[in-house]
Amino acid sequence: MLKLHAVSRDKQFYKVSEDPASKEWYGATDAVKRYIGNNVNVGDEVEIKFEEQNGKRILTHILVTKKSERINNIEYQRPKTPEEREEIKKLSVLSSTCEAIRSMAGQFQTIQDLETTVLKLYNTLISKL
Image (cartoon, rainbow, N blue to C red; front, top):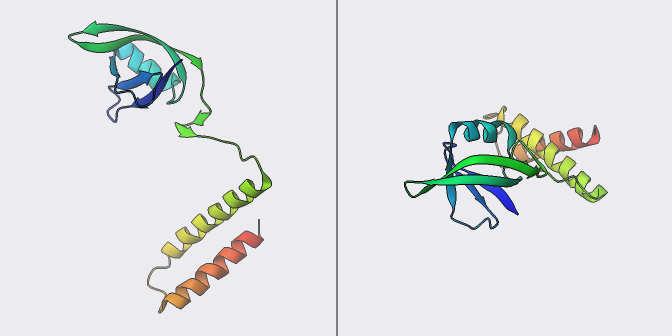
């Protein structure tokens, strides 16, 4: 079972193998690069054909045989328990609280003032959910 494990930053090379620790990278034809950019996510199981050109492997064909559970190349896992959903909610509120506090820079005289404001804002937001 081959998978697309990584795409280089410049999107010119692709790591396709059974083992994510593999060091095998492939170049690709322009058509394959466009196809990968529009249809293939990291983690998808794929079927490939390639040619050796000047000692380098060039993908000439790639077909997704099974999509991974990824959204925009970010691993996605549905929370399984109410506790996990609650934890995600708390982290989301904490993130929103921190963003709001960042916009209030310079308005706190002491660390205790900052702590009090963060706790009040967090508790207010969490109570509204």
